Amino acid sequence: PITVPAFDRGTVERFATLPAGEAHPEGITVGHDGNVYVVTVAANKPDTAGGTLFVFDRDGKHLRTVTIPGSTPWLLDLRFHPHTGQLLIVDYKGAKVLSVDPMTGASSVFMTVTGTDPGLDGLTFDAAGNVYVTDAHEGIIWRVGKGGGEATAWVKSPLLKPTRPPPGIGANGLAFNNKQTALFVPNTANDTIVKIPVSGP
Image (tube, helix red, strand yellow):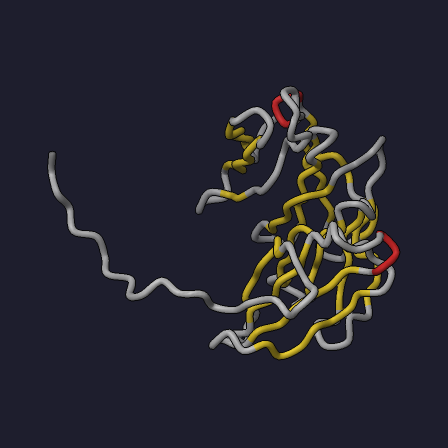
């Protein structure tokens, strides 16, 4: 065997702990301000409780807890839009993407979808600012322009559906390659990675 030295990344340590009574951190992103933004899948709360956003500074100090009225507690992914700066948060049970004020929690619906029992999960952007969101139930990649609105089904494929549940989660996260010629999507239930060409049919 060949021994290869790994880059010394320093000490791995706990960065932060959620406040008492909060649980199940899920989505995470870092803002231009260096703060770390986290949402939870709060299965321990009723669906009417609203979602929760936690903000930590770059050293892990808890800055604030923000309640998001109009959302469910089942928040999965979140990202700052690279063109507009909006904080977009995926509401899994609400089947929508919200634009959320990270200071007050005030929100508006950024993206809606159609279909039967959609399960919105991960989100990403292309260079033009279009937004792509996985549908873990229906096997769809939804797409909407940077201004939001009703999304269209950009790709629909049985390769993105959960055919071996549990878990009933198919298309999960998603990421473009560096040249944005392909989109890669893990299918959690099927233990597969799906490659979607960006150009062509």
